[in-house]
Image (tube, rainbow, N blue to C red; front, side):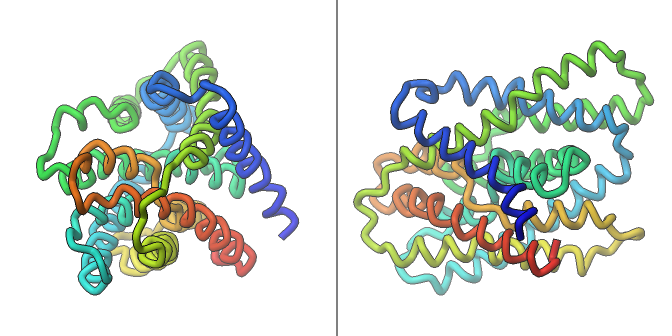
Length: 305
């Protein structure tokens, strides 16, 4: 437990620092910093991680396929659960927040803290697929339309494709280029954590009429996410099965909390709607963050990963 506390302490400290800076300064106001991370930091970190360790294409494909399987299974399970959830009038309004976990600015740092640098590339591949799901399933459910343009502008997804093409073509990337990607990617993890803290600490949850519902959904997100990830590993139809590290990273990513991006999308596409879930999602982000960290700590202590 001491090693787990030591691993997670920098994550929690960076989140709290971001919350403090977000409340007392203007550093995180506006889209500039988040745009820098999503268009430069994350793609550079993903590309460097894939190319530096020369990730096997079959390994990358396995992670992509099992993450897609996770999204399908989690979508089905969540739809069934929401049909019996009191007060939920539009299932598709809650679906993206509960299906797509915070695999980016929470999942990647937690995997790094628990499993080291070798896990970063694996966590980022999973996160890239979830990001694509945010801008397809997420935007589609909330807006009623699917934006191909938004998908094409998705930096991590494009970096994933670029890395796969370079590996498939067996292109030897010059060391100065790798060093540049490493330098640009180094900003990503600490900035993502501080940005997460700023976003969470500044969320407004006034007017949430039913506090019990978002709290129960907050428990569902990491708990069901971990179970569905485990189920996906059990029914994995291909041979060989995922490696021990792949499986551990996949389980951790599945247990992550509601993503801040879910709140951003809910605000953007739910403005003016009487049954918009944005206040519930604000509470879910705050509470699922706590539930997720507790679940990861307990699961790690019990040897689940």
